Structure formats: structure tokens, C-alpha cells
Length: 323
Ligand SMILES: [Fe+2]
Image (tube, rainbow, N blue to C red; front, side, top):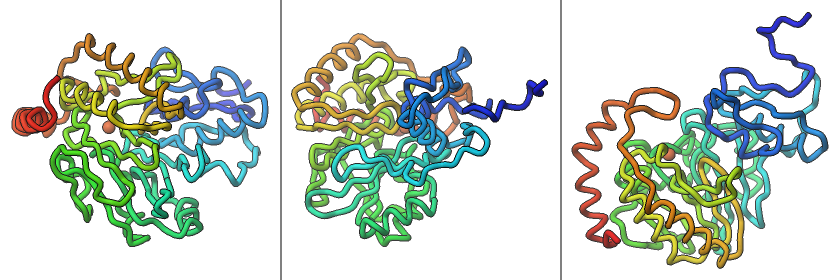
């Protein structure tokens, strides 16, 4: 009889080290789901080649290495990077320091190569970037998703960008975005400051691909655009106002740090966004006392909320209006 403390290695399985980052079920939504305690579990085994590939993607993206393949099953060579659309890739190798956020790569129509947010530093991605001709810019959507971004920027001599309000998270940043106006500091890259989830959150729009960090996602179960107030760290009023800004832009793919990413025609996105905004308008929020994993809010966040957020909010609403 198998020891109940040992996972059954004849099938795909997930260990209790899961940190509930949701990366796994974003990548294998039909076969991995949440248990009652919120941790990921296989709801059923992969049944075909595509589902097996989804399980491998979940395993490589999992920042805690909690997903175990059946013993002896050989991993394919092409699990990541995952092609999402032309010149657009999900990179996998999600970093535990980013709470498992999804990093992306895009080659722009202007011929520039971008890493969006920081994966783990792994030879597979270094090799991929080399094959693409290197990296020109590393763009950080906000303070949570820094990961190994500085190591990749250093390796490829790329510029490293973050907003001034979150800059303490990336001391190696070479370029600091300031203020709340829409800007194009790099040809073909529209910067849309969207404070709220964090005060330095930024969306990057490149060739109709919108990288939103943790400010918005496609909810795979509900099939809707949404942002969870329990994942809003710094200010809900700002986050709602920020997401309204996205109505002014044309995008046909939305890439989320946590949760689902999806492509739609522009008109469908605008309709989905309008529905989302209407729902957010009546969704209440309280400053959090604990992170989703149960850890109490760090003291430095409370200092930030008391001493910095009110000034940011004043400046942001002065720049964009509060309605
Ligand atoms: Fe975040």
C-alpha cells in the first residue's frame, strides 16, 4: 500500500507546497482547479497531447515547483516560450518573488524586443532571447512583478523601466516613468499609468497588445474581465478610475500578470470593459489587513498608505479627473 504522505508518482499530482498563485490553472484550466483550501489540484488527468502540454506548462510556470509529472514522463522541449499570437509569447518560469506572475515577450512592429515583467533567470529563456536577437527594453508593470528582470536587463544590455512610485522595488532600473500623463517614451510603446493595485502600476500598449500587470485579468471561470478587490493593495478609487482610462485605447490582446490573458476584437474588449467597469462601480473595498495567503500586511505598506498614497491620489485625480 502506498504511503499516504507520499504523492502518487504514477500520475500528475500537486504537492501541498502550492502557494495559491493561480498560475497553474490559468495554463491548464480544464484539468487543474482549486481545492477547498484554495490550493491547486488536478481535477482529472490530461487526456490528450494538448492537455499534457498544458500540464507541462503549469509545471514549469509553477513558482514553487509543486506540480509533479508522472515519474519517467519525458518533458517536451517546446513547453515555453508559448506563442500566443504573432511575435507575442508567454514565457513561463514564473518567479516565486512575483507571487507567480506571468511574464511575456513581444517583438514590436518597430523591431524592438521587450521583456514584460520578470521571470526566473533560466538558461532556456536566455537562449530564447539570444535567438530573438536580444532584449532592447525590460518593462515592469509594477513593484510586485520584478523577479529576475534586472539580471536579464544586465545580460542583454537592455533598458529597465519602472514607474517612480514603485521604483524602490527595482533599484537597478535605468529609466523611471513619471507622472500620470499618457506618454510614448519608446517608439511604439504607449505608457498608461494606472495606479491603484499599486501606486506605480502602469499598462504598456504595444501594437494593440495591452500589458496590464495585476490591475485587470480575464477570469477563466466566469469568462469576464475583472479585478478582485482583495488583490487591490493601495487604493480602490484610483484603480477603478485607472481602468476607465483603458476605454481610450484600441487593443486586441490583454496580457495579465495574474489570471487569464485573452485576445478579442477591439469592439468586444470595449464591451467587456464597460461591463467590468459597471460592476466595479458598485464593488466595495476596504484596505486589506492580510494578504490572500493569510500573512498580515507588512508595516511598510501601512506607512506607504498613510504617508504616500493620499498625495498620489490627489495628484492622479488632478491629472485625470476623479470621474
Ligand atoms: Fe501585483
